[in-house]
Image 1 (cartoon, one colour):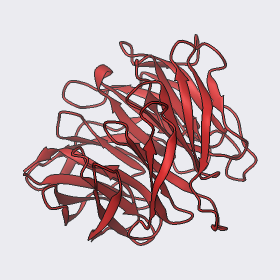
Image 2 (cartoon, helix red, strand yellow):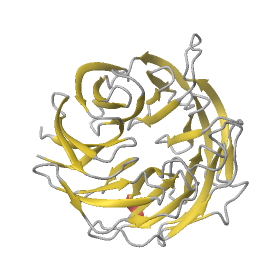
Image 3 (cartoon, one colour):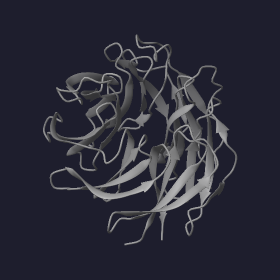
Length: 358
């Protein structure tokens, strides 16, 4: 089984790092720094050897890089594209992802409190910004003085983009025109958002493969919510709310990452406050969650993690301990086990498996 390249961003750093991952044995071999750029999030083109880097600069820019499949080195691949000027503090962009059916890069601009859509050319370079939509609102926490978009997820039918906004305590629902790469707040049925409890800090959302259930992680409340998705009315309705903290935990709440496995049986969450990884089983009939595992993340402050496409591995970015740790996944029951394998990377905040292999 060939090795794969893994790219890791460094929170408040100035470099992107690479490592080789062996999916047969679950081992990581460091390559080192491969680009000099601030990075809050990275993602790859689905078919081309191109890595997109979301900058931490307040201008809110995304930079494409060509991946050298032999060495992991990165070289600029076209020009950076800005999403919107940011006049507020907050760290630039928070998240980027590629919507493959429309060849669109979707961006959550945390600092500016908006989401943006950037067309991707056939060669993987970025065209000019096609559209952006501004969030509104604030919350009671001192970190919620204005809107802070934190994620962008396309609805199963491709008609909407959902945007958890950390500052506004809302998940905004925007219409998405895939042909024109356009996001719009106009023409959305209902209110155009799902409101969480004040001070929740929505951070991540994923859809169940069945298409009618979504899971939302709130950072400040450190909870995970099971939501019913109505594609006709474009609405989310709360069905279940579970704390990711144990009953004994009394520290600062801070949930972070969220993922669901390919067949929708298991949901994974990281909790930076209590320093844990959690695994939930999703009921196949109802989508409701049951906690099946709470375990240490192999380091300190699991900022994010990435599930390998095989479903066999989970790589965890432990920001404070400066490590990326490898966990094996028992695909029959969903639980994870620390393999002891890790690499040292300063302040890792995002892990991206590249499409290229050797």
